Figure 1 (cartoon, rainbow, N blue to C red):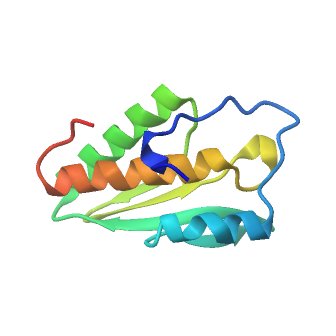
Figure 2: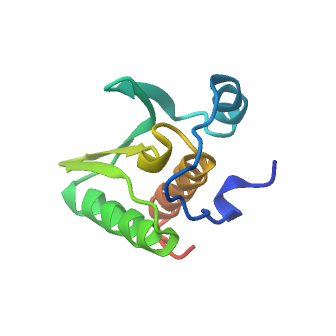
Length: 121
């Protein structure tokens, strides 16, 4: 598979199918810092990011929000002093979709850019 962070999300309206457990397992190695959790019986990708302070956490949250808007795919984000937790899943699929893996990779790229002092992607 090509670099996930370079891919574009596809529109997900009704009728899209969630990834199977085998498909999820095949894609997870591309996102070694992410885990799969279940909320209300549905899988989600989750990762917690650590930051030096609240300002950096807010900057990261804003950048993830910008990319989410560009891709029309939106996460659950919990921002607090020194950390941000991001969950990706696809409501229309009732679970995980390839878009979630694409967005998780883009989220990792944003975090890497912030740690380098560069948020331009």
